[in-house]
Length: 163
Figure 1 (tube, rainbow, N blue to C red):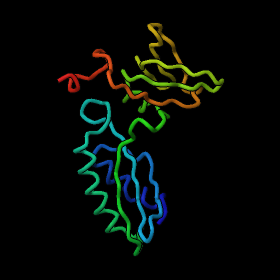
Figure 2 (figure 1 turned 90 degrees about the vertical axis):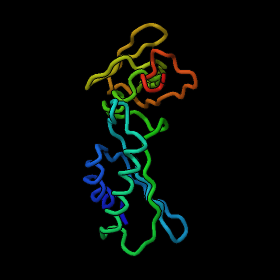
Figure 3 (figure 1 turned 180 degrees about the vertical axis):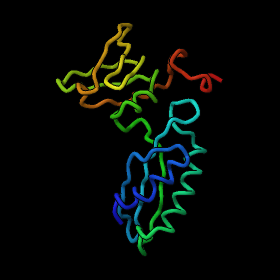
């Protein structure tokens, strides 16, 4: 069982649910294998998929893998998960889906900037860093991670979170 084969089977299945395949990991777990599938998507409000969408896609992915020849006779456990905050922001769509969130950006030159995503484009992002706007080109970013905020400012929350 290879990641590329699993990805080939799952990519069109996930697309039916408006999801993109971010990563496939196959991890030995005794006699079984853990097939971890990381997905992303816009979801109804543009900030990522909902749990219900992931659950439905997970069922369809399981059926597709069972019908495909990529798993052979090996027993496996399927785990479908969203990107979460621990995965780095690498593509423009990752930045877009995290607009309003606080991020720590390590630049290629070594500096680290922490700011809130204000806007984004295909080539870069605009951050609010302590009340001042800072534009950063994606090519200058070494690594960027969303910061977990327990008390996110009201202006940075979406309407459904305020409810």
